[in-house]
Length: 356
Image (cartoon, rainbow, N blue to C red; front, side):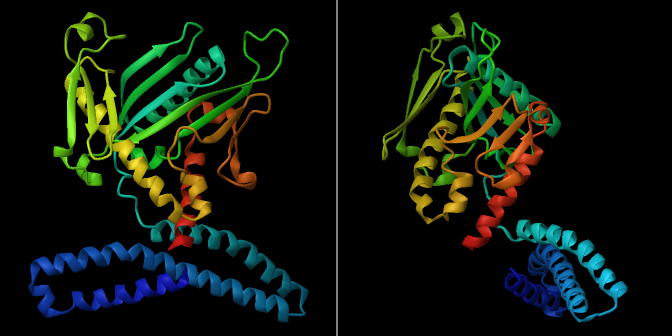
């Protein structure tokens, strides 16, 4: 990592020299470009300098600890090391984040789906619990949420929920949520007090445009049809359902969630792009390190990612390791999932750094 910091520092100093060059200063467009790049590298150089200083201070304190015979001086060295090591760790995490290439999809809005999985009525109730948990999180983030489709369960909860989430850094904070969420608890209908295991699946689909993944619009066939379902007579009497077929790959996606054909077009296109994108990512997955592949996975809803254990008041994310993988269930169900998001982001960034 220090090699990368040094290379960036050299580039930063070169840009600094260019900003003092009269020829570049006189060229407004070039000057703006150089200044923009200079400011982009500044946080990395600043954090890198602090990190190197802390490493040198720790090294000096350890050398003093090894060389000193005076007990008071040894204690002073130990105290200095103890105070510097947390600072070193924090700066290391900051540098990893700064040095990690940004995912171009992080700024995208998403289509967010929750579906009851195995476990019958209890799975539907758990899907409802996840909906409330995520709803609190969305509210804390200040995001806009539109309910596109819902299928309530007769026992409470939901069989399916489809949401449109928009705001700042939506996909960046939700991209690790796709997969199977498993719950272990005693259902209210369980007379003997036995713990049951049920599940719900979450899918997070970034709202990409065809050009984002090089899909030509002329390669897409569009079919509209009369939808049926929860939309009532309006849905049945108008051709509001939309189906897209990508001719080169045969990928198909459709939407009947909305009464609006325009909205269904947006949803169906998002799904089609997501299907094709997942196929592309699957091809690229072999190039990922095993560590990062376990974190990001394929975005597939069939991967078990998290267990919510009611008897032990614990949430375990299976992509993390050690004590870092366990979280307080009560807090999580109140929408406090920032700790999980941050831990997964840090682990993913570290894996990216190892790859790079």
